[in-house]
Length: 451
Image (cartoon, rainbow, N blue to C red; front, side):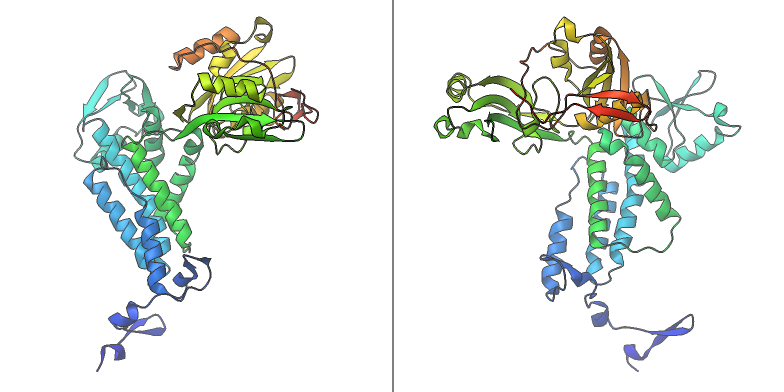
C-alpha cells in the first residue's frame, strides 16, 4: 500500500495522507502575489525569490540579543513557507505580534542589568533580581492584591516612578518613559499593537494576506531595532532654491541652480529642506508649514542676488530628526496661529508675543495645530495636558516667556532667529484659524496672497 492510500479521520471526512512531493506544491492562492503585483503568477520560483527578497530586506541590528534574533529568523522562515500553504502568512503575522512582547520584555531586564527597583506605597524601595520576566510578573502579582493602592511602582533611571504591572501596555509605557521608543505617531500605534497581540492570544479564525504579514514583520523589526539603540528616524536636508512668479512656483537643489533660465521677474528664496518634501510650495519662514523641518537661509530677492549669495555660501547638507519635534502655537484675540519653531518664536517682535502660548510635541506641525484647534474650539476628544489620543503630547502653556522656558526645560537649546515675513503666492496653507467655539472655526483666505 502506498503512502497516498493512507487516510486519517477528521470529523466526518477522511483526509488522505499526501506525499512529500504533494506537500511541496505551491498553493495557487500564494501565486496571486508576485513581482508583477496582484494576479496569477505561473512562475513559482520567481514568486519564492520575490518573497525572500522582501522578507530578508527586513533586518535586525547586531545589538539585538540572540534569543530575539532567533525568534525573528523563525518568523521570516514561517513567512516563506506561505508559498506552499497560503494560511502561513496569517500565522507569520500573528507570530510577529507575539514576538513583540518577547522582545520588549527581554529589553526590559537587559536595560536594568537584571536588577529592577520598585517603590511601594510607603515610599520604601524594593530591588529584585528575577531569573526571567515571567518570574518578575509573578512577583508583581503578589503586590497587586488589594487594589491599585497596594501596587508597587517601577523606579525609572531618572528617579521618577510609573505604574507597571508587567503587561504589554505597561511595557510600552516603560520603554517610552525611558526614551527607548519615540515618535508621537508611533506612540498611538501602541494601543493597536496591544489589541492585536491580545487578539492573537485569544484568537478567532481569520485570514490575512502576504502584505499583512510583511507589514507586521517590518513594524516588529522597527520596534526591536529602536529598543536596542537604532537612531530616531531622520531626513537629509539640502540647500534648496525656491523660485516663483505670479504664474508658478518651482524649486530644486541649489547645486543645480542655473539663474539665467528664470524670467527676470522671478523671486527667489533659499532654504534648507528635504527635496522630497510634499509641502515645500507652502514654505513660510515665520511658521512651520511643511511636513519635514525646513529652515530659512536667505531671501526673498532676485535670481541674480540668489546666485551671488550661493557664491558666498556654498550649498550644504544636514540630517535632522523628524519625530518628537517641539512646536509653539500662539492663541490671541480668538486667532490660533500655525506652529512656530522655538528659535523663530524666540526671535519675534514684542508686538507678536501677546496671548497664550502652547508648547506641543508632535512629529509634524499639522497634528499639533489640529490638536490645539480641537481643544480651543471644544470639539472633544483632545487632552489639555500630557499625551493625547491623537499623535500629540501637551508639554505646557503660558505666556511667551514661559513657553520658551518650557522649551529649555525640555532640553532644547533656544537660539533666537529673526526671519523675514513673506509668503509664496501659490501657498494654500492659512496662517491662522479664528476659533468660534462649539466645534467651529474660520480659516484665513489664502486665495490672493502677495509677497
